[in-house]
Amino acid sequence: MIMNRQGIWWIEGNSLFMTDGKTLFSYKIKIESEKAVFESILDWDQDGREDDQYKGMLVKIK
Image (tube, rainbow, N blue to C red; front, top):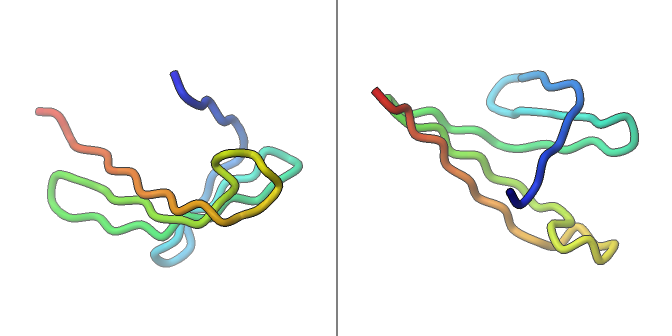
């Protein structure tokens, strides 16, 4: 496992938001038939700068 975030999640328009009580994360989402793509700029490497591009994909398994 690379990361396990817990918090409050919600959707507004085409954006997905999550807060863990300290930090607010936002992702642009695009849903196409059997997959969802999430994109954001965040501090993935935890160096204190939000300068890392994140792109993740979830695929529906039948």
